[in-house]
Image (cartoon, rainbow, N blue to C red; front, side, top):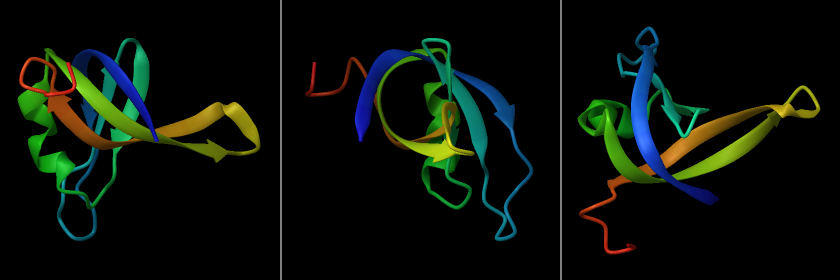
Length: 85
């Protein structure tokens, strides 16, 4: 898992999952990330829109090329309230 610090911007809300949970695409420092479709992070991600955050993510390789890798957010914390600062 990796960490990134920057301003989070919500880009897109995907259709609800089959279980009815939200799923979003966001950008942090011009890199695109997604929330897992049935993760609880989908419910709180909009609270961090246009705020500086520390995000933990995992990259998944798709199609054999790292340029096509998908970045999935695991955890997001407010930068100014985090003890990691």
